[in-house]
Structures are given as structure tokens and as C-alpha cells.
Length: 272
Image (cartoon, rainbow, N blue to C red):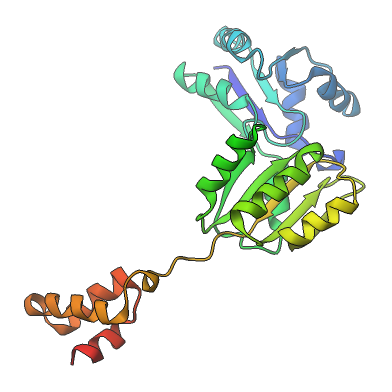
């Protein structure tokens, strides 16, 4: 059965192209590319000659059905983006969904990803994170999106274009406060740069320096909200007293510790 191959491509340095990606692109019947001109340079570099069709956000409905029909007729297709993994902040997610809806087999050929590469060298928490991608262009919409993330405790990852960077940093400062931020620029390219700083310092820096290149912004998550801010220790003890009548002091202290954040031992001692 024919397949759709989701193929990762370099985000800057062509040496990051995997042998498996080269083999896959060489063997499929055709390639769906975000920008055929960009992908042609990649194919030429590796001596690959394959027919391509353009598949981007402005033609996903029309071309998506066309791609599915060709795969259903027995042709293998590879989908690539201009740089990195298809489907991540990319219309490739639509064709993948179409494949699932139509029983088309999929195979992923992993490759570089700007968000993961930037996160790895950010110096911020990497075990838990959320990926926001590009914020909306509209200022009101951008504030709404940032407000929804204001209390997010995980590390937050954004993509941003150079001409919008200053405005985005200022809006982040207004909503998030002066958090730590890692700014990764031109990952894997000649002018790669990673700057771990604060939002205040970043704003000041780019007031004096013109932003150049593509950016990945890694923002420190919100500080954990402590239940103690809402429930006093005395209130927690009173709650435990009520429970203790039915389940005993030890069990009550344990239960109230879970819901308030206060230590079980402290609540238990107060009960006694």
C-alpha cells in the first residue's frame, strides 16, 4: 500500500539532513512541498530529481484531496516543509489528518526541529513545556493569547519573525512581567546565537540592535501558585478538625495536606 512520508529537513545546516531522509525523497513518486523553489535547492544539493507539487496554507483544501487521491491510486508521496518538521506550525497537519480520515498509511522520517533545538540550549526547564508557535498579528488577539498563558507554569515556546520581535517582547513584558527568556536566533546557521536574559534586558538590547533572522523565544513559566495564598494555616487546621471526626487525625491531616499544600506533619501536630 502506498504511503505518505512525513520528512524532516534541515533548518539551516544541510549537513543535518539524515541519510534516511535522502533515501526516502529519492524513492517516493512525488513530493509535496511548502515552497517548491526552496525544496528544489535541497533536492539539487543531494542530487534528487523528483516531481513536486506545491502544498501550502492557501491551497490545502484543493491540493490535499489531490494528494490523497494519488496516494490511494498507489503513488508514494513525501511531504516536506521549507525547514524542519512538517506539521509543526505548518499546514502539513491537514494532510496528515486527511490520511487518517481516509485510511492512508503514514510513516515519519524525523529531522531537525527549531523548537526542540532551541529548548535544549535555553537553560530553562525542558522536562515540561508548551508550544505556542507564532502569536497572531493583531495586537488585541496577541494580548488575549498571552493572557491565556499568563499562569502557565511550564516553559513556553514561541516562534517570531524579526519585524515583530520588538512588539512581541514588549507585550510579553506587559502580561508576564520581567521573566527570564532565552532568545535563539538562526539555529544551525552561520550566525546562530542563543541569548539567555530577561524580558527587560531583551527589550533594551533590541531597542539598540535591529533584529535579524528567525527567532525562537523560550519563556520561563509562571511561578507555582501556592494554595497558602488562599487558605491560611489556621483555616487548614480547622478543615482537618472537621474531617478528623470521621476519619481520624492522621488521615484528616493527610487529606488536607493534599488540598492546601501545607505539610501533613504540621497539620497533625496542630490537631494534637
